[in-house]
Every structure is written in C-alpha cells, then in structure tokens.
Amino acid sequence: MHRGHDDDLPGRSEGAAAGMGHNRPLPPQAIQWQRPHLASENNVTELAAQAEADLDLVENAFSEGFAVTSDPTSFLRLAQVPFDAIAPDGKRLVLLRVETDAVADMGAITPHFGGDSFRYDPLPAAMVSKRRRLRFIYFDGAAPRALKLEEVRGLKQA
Image 1 (tube, rainbow, N blue to C red):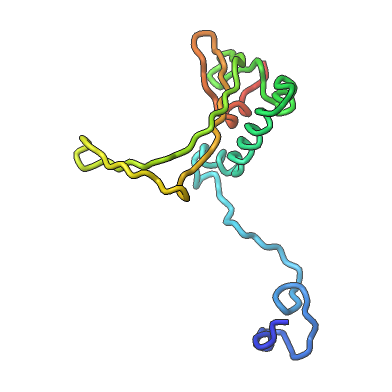
Image 2 (cartoon, one colour):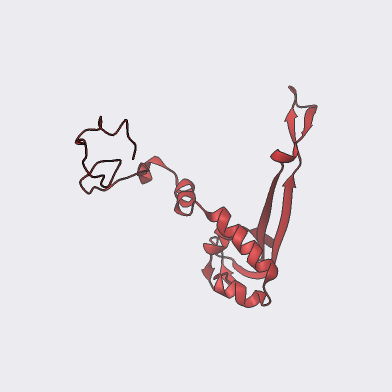
C-alpha cells in the first residue's frame, strides 16, 4: 500500500498497520467541509436557495414522473402541490394547469457596443444545453400566475 511515501507521515512507523485516515490512525473528530453562513451575512433569498440546493434535480424528477403518470391528480397530492392555496400576498390561488417544456439552448448572442446590433454564435453539439422547465399555473381571481416548484412549496393550503 502506498509504499515509498507512507514512512514520511507523522505518527507512522515502518510496518505499522493502516488505520482510519490516510495510512495512519487518527482520533475521531468532527469535520466541517463548508463554512457555516450566518443570517447577517446573507439576505433571505440566498438562505432560501441554500436550504434546497438540489431543487433543480427535484424539478427534473418531478417533470419526468409527471409526464408518465397515469393519475396526475394523485401525483400532485403525493408531491404536496396544493390545488387551493393562499399566496404570500393573501390572495386565493386555484391550480389550473401544470406545464413542462423541453428547452435546448442552440446559440449565444453577444451585444455590440452601443446596443444596436449583436453577434450570434451557434453552439457546437457538445455545448448545447438541454433542460426541462416546470411551471404551475394558478388563477388568483383576476389573472393567471405562473409559479415555480419552489414558490408552490411555499404556499399555504387554503
């Protein structure tokens, strides 16, 4: 095992058995890989984004499952998507529709100085990005509202 460099590690003698850690026994210890963030350092939206860092993966899984489900109503209930809810502004929202789109970015634009023209570059196949977009369309009594999964999860049940 790792012959040639294991002798120069502190606390390691020739012929000693390998233990936890890298070729040497270590006392048990807590390890913090991330720096904890204090509320005073971040605004509320950044803290909310940190609370569920994998929300994009959750949305992808939801879109894939919703597209093939035989019972969309039960799927929404299992996902705890409210059919009748109260928005943060106090308005009542009722669920009308769930929309999923397949999106592929095929090119990029760069505006020229002055803003009157732009440069267009088609993307090579390796750089084309594909993603799904998920929206929940609610009606608030006056107009439809398109909400993301993160916003829907923050709604209160009516």
